Image 1: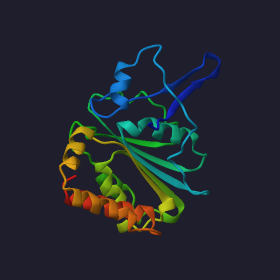
Image 2 (image 1 turned 135 degrees about the horizontal axis):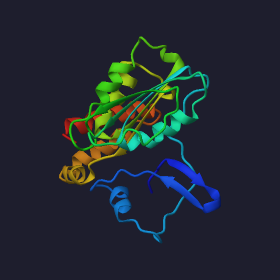
Image 3 (image 1 turned 135 degrees about the vertical axis):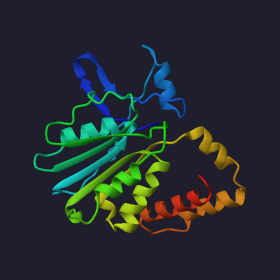
Length: 222
């Protein structure tokens, strides 16, 4: 099962729109590339991966191409008066006019990442979200390649000290083939130690446990 943003719905026609990024790894991209009329797609109840506190005055949305549909949907549904800054990391050939963010969002396009080169998502978050903002009045949403987002999560939670309710970091994809190969090569004892990061952290804030877990992965070259 995968979570995707619904871009449009036409109930009378029994149709809905879902945007896919086509790439060779993972499950959804290759499926979308082979999809044909008549193929069966199952849907379940909606799940939200964006949950700002009530009364925010600003929000920052940073994503790569996979998070673009969700960022556009968030911007379109944002209440009037909430300042919205959006930064999207895209491949050089991407059509930047394909999504409507509304008239009030400040949108910046950055070329890079997306499996074509190094991602700057972490640096982008660091360059935008800092003490110049009223941190207790806003919300930060970051989405993209899982490994590239580790620095963003660590910065927001540990270095900047944001409450877990003030940000959401969503890993949308991983170059799964190469990652799985490296993970499978780890000694069994190392994999048990990684699992213990979660089982030995009962009662801890999940975002703090996630940061520790990702630091261990970094140390292992994963």
